[in-house]
Structures are given as C-alpha cells and as structure tokens.
Amino acid sequence: HVCLLRRYCTDFYLWFDPDDAGNKASERAMNMYEELNLSLFGINFIPIFINENLDPDQFVEKYGKLKVIEIMKKSKEEITRKKQAC
Image (cartoon, rainbow, N blue to C red; front, side, top):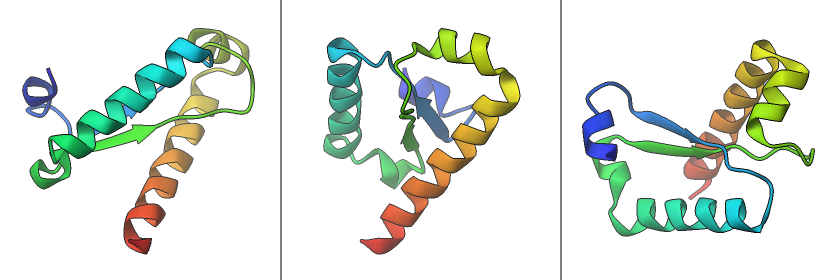
C-alpha cells in the first residue's frame, strides 16, 4: 500500500488509538519502515502522539482541524530534528 500511496505523497502520518493495540500497531509500522528502508525511497513515516487519552476521531471532534494541522507540523519537526541528530 505504501508503494501505491507514494505516487501521491511522501509523508505518512501515523496516528493510532492510545491503547495497547494502537501502541503495538505504531511500533509495527515503525519497525516495517526501518526494515524496508523506506527512507531510501523518500518516504517518511511521522508518528503522532498526544498527551490526551483520546482516539484520533475524538481529538478531531473536540479540538478541530486547525489543532490537528498544528500537531502534524510539530510531529514532522520532531522527526526531522531526530533524523538530523543521527
């Protein structure tokens, strides 16, 4: 799916539910990213973590689109800083 979606974008934001299943899914996705060396293809996985115990849809409903965009920008900045530090 990632290869197909790569035709349309390079940044993939991963925002899972804040429960055990969501944490495991996020970990699996990031492991896949590393194992397949997706960064070599210009693909970026950007995980989104929030400090509130809300599912993504609940967060959007509570705070709206502009807050989501803000969080996406911050998440991308964080992952960029981490990559530059390596």
